[in-house]
Image (cartoon, rainbow, N blue to C red; front, top):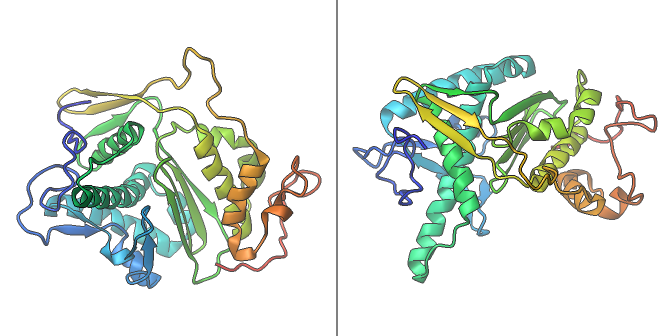
Length: 328
């Protein structure tokens, strides 16, 4: 990895006196930014609402912060302004945002959650006196995510294709809707609000979108019912779990620009990139995503060969009319 890119995972530098993105020492403890955008927390009254961490500990959305120098905070603020303005306009404006802007916005939130999880792990390790048990595969993923997020301040070019895919869907949400999900182990993110929803796969080189190509073609051009989007989301979260590669990237620093190139995902074993799809496990994932509507696993996989779906009808065409409440 290029030496000009800051790597906090070399010595696990996750204190509150160091800028999370550049590694520079901060001048004061007030140099911090919110993980979740202030405008979004206020719009949906999130500041004091609970956010569950991996260790089952609950914090508030407002408590999730990142140590950040003023100049870097200004760059993220510019991104926030662009995204907030697009969100106010709705789906079309969000869809037309530059993908790199959306990546900076999404990746800051997801990495911010990761940063806070790591800080918790370090504190628990110090209290217990036991070494921190941290998966090297996760370190690899988080290090790459952090390096790519530095494209907000470093002139960086992603060769061949972006390592991330951010897809925007039109959704008929109820006005008060705010639905956030992430899975930091697989680096997938979803957000549903206003008249749209986002699914972001942050380190798969676009393979999940290819995997779901048939479904994406059928829903293309249609406004989704929330239960339909949650079904798409369940498919993505499950396929991200089935994705069995650990993507590698080469970083070449020319002094003026850092070039990032993905290494091929195929290997000498010729093993498929995704593990086999299992209807029962998918049904369990879908049951969780459909929790607001109360559908049970038994109902979902009553026919194991054809799990319940609201996306298509008996002929396999998009189901334009769904007779269930919008809910949240």
